Length: 203
Image (cartoon, rainbow, N blue to C red):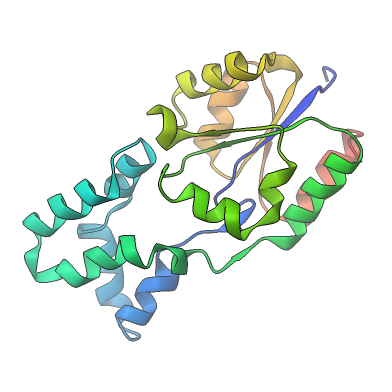
């Protein structure tokens, strides 16, 4: 195991709990089948990923409403009621961030996130103030697991891949990071993460 000089965290579903179902269960009034069909066929993960890659929400909503005018209200809610998709932070993981910072570890975040929505999270959750640097995909037009976004992180903050520990819940993102030489942890839950970083000597 190479020495670790910096820890890089993913954000969604590691530090904060993001899921459009928190919003759409309200809008579909318990109709799980209808909600899942809408999220699979209309406001799809691929459509959402384009916002993470930099597409403005105004354009995204307008284009989708043109295609599915019968769902206009539901589509517009994805934008105007977006914060209801993030009801809370994962406190136990955020506590780990605070502990690592208190012990002097350089901390960074690398996240697939809309450039428009990420500032809302920064205002709501104080964990983001603990990071020495944050790369937001929507700000630079690159998304994980594209190796280019990792190289952007390395160059922007003068980091060497082999001395970085990368933590993410996505197997594809973890595999990409590992292929670039980063040390990695596939995030499962905060308890397991605490055990793993303790074994590495970070706590």
